[in-house]
Amino acid sequence: MAAEHSTVFIIDDDAGMRAAIEGLLESVGLPSESFGSAREFLDRQRAGGPCCLVLDVRLPGESGLDFQRKLAEAGVEIPIVFITAHGDIPMSVKAMKSGAMEFLTKPFRDQDLLDAIQQALERDRARRQQQGQVANLRKCYATLTAREREVLPLVVSGMPNKQIAFELGTSEINIKVHRGHIMRKMQAESLADLVRMAEKLELPAGR
View 1: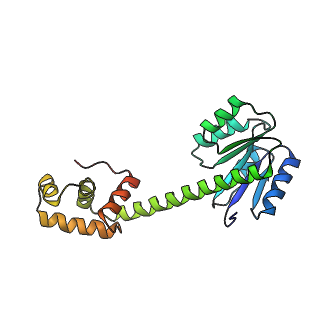
View 2 (view 1 turned 90 degrees about the horizontal axis):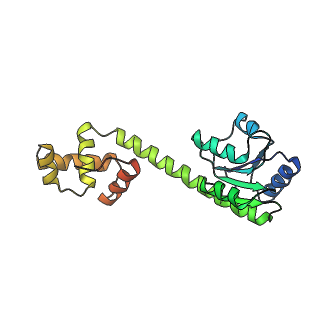
View 3 (view 1 turned 30 degrees about the vertical axis):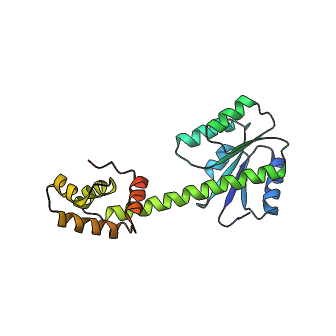
């Protein structure tokens, strides 16, 4: 299990359970931090690497499900593995529909928890990688001129240069030049590559 730059956060008001999970994670080389309440978790400054949250359903104050909703409303994206000694089917369905990775009932198998955590970390790692790619694409897009931004959606729509020139009231040669600049600035190796970039940037469709 890859542990590099990953952290597992544990929120459970049972100190014994927190210690047991921390020990389990340490045995497979996964760093972890534990908290007795959701408030403690929010008050602590956390590292920015891939992470996930092992969250008890029953907590002092607000419940784990309430905290899941609060994180979502605040735009905090972190995969959650729920654990509980008092779970039922409606509760687990609600948690999963709200995006939880897993819902484990105590006592659970160590391997089941480790598997859920691994999947959660992989999801967060993939999300961060995708966000990094989009951020880089936005930087590239910001280097385009206003005219090139007009041409780009028409190019990715599959429209030929001649038609793009007619649509924009310019010459076909100018469109070829703009197209070359777009490919270079966006670091696209092919039209298909440029189409994927436009989709990730959620650019409006061509005319």
